[in-house]
Length: 71
Image (cartoon, rainbow, N blue to C red):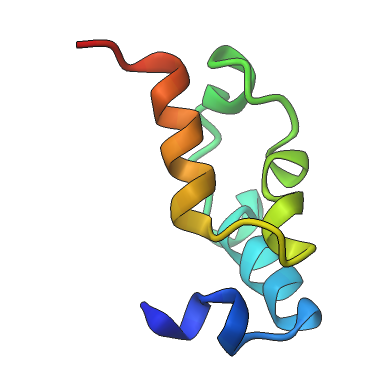
């Protein structure tokens, strides 16, 4: 998965990665409404730090999980 690291992608590529992965009409999203149900809000906002080159995807996912998983 090194191909998705910030150091290996441009901003445009990161935008495309997120757009493709969250494309509800393209199979990336199962329309489960979990983004709103779990308080993440707009998923594009959640991934903006990745697009901006500030946080890796794994860091964003870890922060999200730590907000909801206990134990």
